[in-house]
Amino acid sequence: MRIVAIAGSLRAASFNQQLVRTADAHAPPGAVVEVWQGLGQVPPYSEDTDLDPAPPQVAELRGVLAAADAVLIATPEYNGSVPGQLKNALDWASRPFPDSALRDKPVVDWASRPFPDSALRDKPVAVIGASVSPGGTRSAQAELRKVLARIGADPLERTVPVASAWSAFDAEGQLTDEPALRELRVLLAELHDQTQPTIEPAAS
Ligand code: FNR
Image (tube, helix red, strand yellow):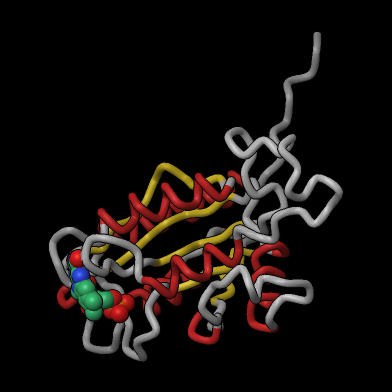
């Protein structure tokens, strides 16, 4: 089972980059976490360039997400919300709107099923995040879960906020906060379970 992880920070010494690397070391048996590092190359979203074929980095993003069994996103918090480049990537991922005969037709039911062709449609997604403040990106995580639900992904209710990052990580950038590590393991196990087929009890 493959979990694709994205850190929403472009900073070289990012705590959120460290967080997704830590997740790999704590994945449950049978799961691997692959960190996607292409976020910085995703161009600004414009409907004028959202064409077929998509810009190469966008095609890569969509392909990586579509092929994943589950997605893990570590978001920093910028001014109480999700960093712009991460939101920009999710806007790209939410498309393409179907280029089928239904495109632009009023029968498309936006309210109940927006973005049916999104690379994240029905995808289990877990949200985590680290910040230097005591809030641990709780506001950004709530906003991110809202966007993911709007896109049609399946965001887990459980999240992991890592607060006061300067003390939660050691000088080498390793997450050493034991409660946070425990929460991360529980979240990854839940994400793994979310990808397993539900077995219906046999009829008697
Ligand atoms: C921040 N930071 C921040 N922290 C927070 O807890 N709440 C916030 O609203 C903000 N706002 C904010 C805005 C901007 C523009 C920057 C650059 C930073 C601080 C942030 O938590 C800190 O820089 C983290 O270290 C960012 O995550 P990475 O880059 O370490 O992954």
